[in-house]
Length: 98
Image (cartoon, rainbow, N blue to C red; front, side, top):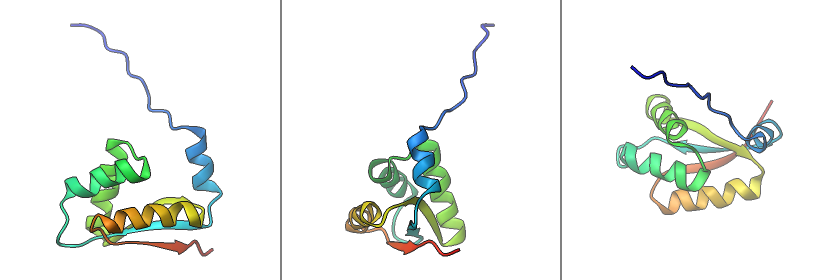
């Protein structure tokens, strides 16, 4: 048996900075129309999520009814929100309170 080396996932620093310094959140809403595959593909293409992150978000959206999939500035998130809603998925941008 060959020994395999486990490489931990490393997230880019810019992603962490965006998540920590934002004032808005992009929320994706659950529905009974869109498939998991469509939502996952959209999160990857529009939000820049990797496969695992998109799958986890889709599961939370399904279970909780909605989920904040991305934090950032209003203009950036509004553009993403428009693309997501154009694909038939419910999404909103809300100000982070607290």
